[in-house]
Image (cartoon, rainbow, N blue to C red; front, side):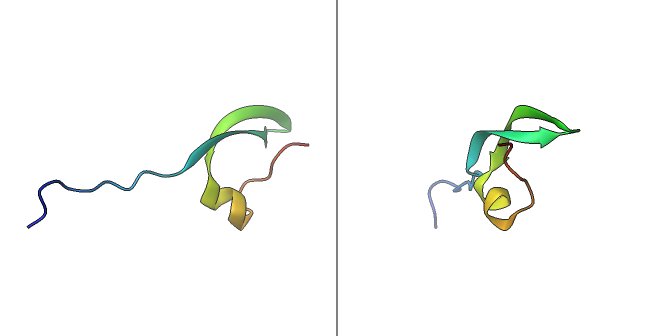
Length: 42
């Protein structure tokens, strides 16, 4: 029996990304950045 339930939180990073053509700082998971679902703003 496990004493406490373990939670798996996403690894969020504050990154500049393109949102509607304008760069914004948003929290994005590292998995999304690695897979290419979200592109960083230059």
